Amino acid sequence: MPVVKVSMLEGKTPEYKRTVLDSIHDGLVESIGIEDWDRFQRVEEFAKSDFEKPDFKSDDFMIIELSIFPGRTKEQKGRLIECICGNLNSRLSVDPADVFIIINEPPLENWGIGGKQRG
View (cartoon, rainbow, N blue to C red):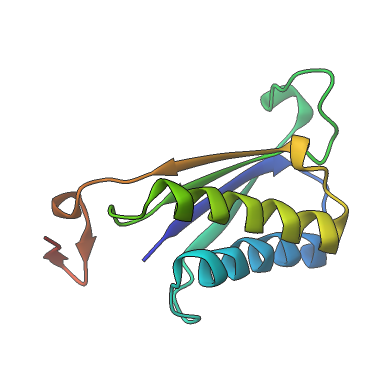
């Protein structure tokens, strides 16, 4: 049950943002085997004055934060990163250098789903 948060500069079209979310979701399905229905995603957009990035990053730069259940191997997480970056590159021409991915793995006891503590 991944939770996805994408932070990017404002001004992208709804289609662009949908493709970003689809690219991430498809990477999650392919690399770590989540169910196709398992989509808990959001895009946060920021004005240039509120989104600091290095000058050598383009306006396509984004930060993708993934919160996932613990237990995936280093190799699975590496494949996840590669899949997401590959999808964004092939579908939107986003340079992988403009994609910053953070994977968080809170313990199961820190997840509350359906009013119940997991784990």
